[in-house]
Image: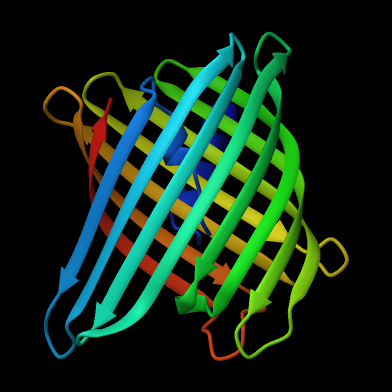
Length: 245
């Protein structure tokens, strides 16, 4: 029954919705990852979208790991820019309790996203990370935390809020072949639970030649209270080439 509940949760989770999310980028033995993605579609509308990520992580001590991620995204529709985003995220994870299954995370984030009319979003937060299970090649993680968020929005009022930030991650890894990562975040306001964001990503990563990998990801973001003139949900499919040092 426990395994049945897990697989039901896993498949329902994969069709739920997605926000910037670092889970598929931190599960690696390598210290540096460079990731480039491109999505081009032509028809009645010509759309071009590109993304470049750089991730650096390293162990400070046995159970302490630091991660820094820089990401840039650019998009055009019919040769007119619709997306110009830069994103920085740093996180310290210390798995120091319960034989390394339970830990503490602290993180900082800065983001600019013209597509969502975000002139500047900054946040600082902390929480707990718990390894739910480890079954052969399959791992599950649960994160619970709080974050302070500051937003400067175009043509709208500035925001200063406290949100709960929670995530559920499933990771299946066949060593040296492929990896599946499924993550969903749920981030409601502390004082107004009807104002929330859901952010999900499902990614499959194939090993190719030595340190070269191919990644295909599906992302969904839902915001119950988005900035003015912005739709409350966004979906994207991206193809990436990864190189690990």
